[in-house]
Length: 176
Ligand code: FE
Image (tube, rainbow, N blue to C red; front, side, top):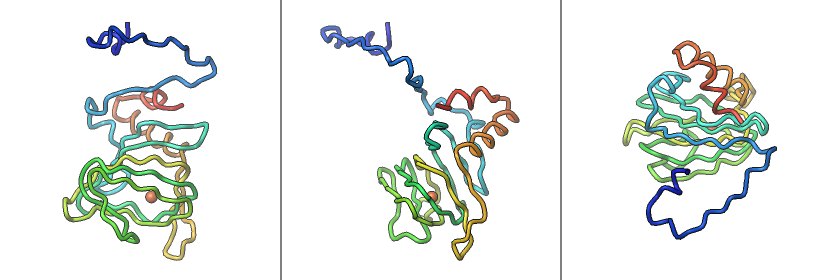
């Protein structure tokens, strides 16, 4: 019996039993409040990410980014959109005209270039981002200086997890 079926108060409801198509990817579910610090990977000074899902078919990924104080993510361009939902703190883009606060949602369109910074109001931020494609790091003229995609992220996170004892399998487990 699954967890929901065991809940009292739902006995009178018939649960449907339609199997997942055999070609479908497997479901992924976990609690991040059971995380340990090793699951957070530093990606700069005072910036960490907690990857939640790497989609190797679509080249997308979902992660929580946390940063504090002078933490920033250098100037970059998104050739594909990004969705962001602020969980805690205050943050924004040097190029933007808003302050992200707990509960705020942002859709960053394909083609946007920006520099992420922690806003001093709360001095830290924790934001859930869904990246629909790679990140291109650019110089002040917009010329590309580097990139990250789902595969470079996986490689980086595997190295991180190998070095702290979580192991590569921890990363394979969140790939679809
Ligand atoms: Fe960005």
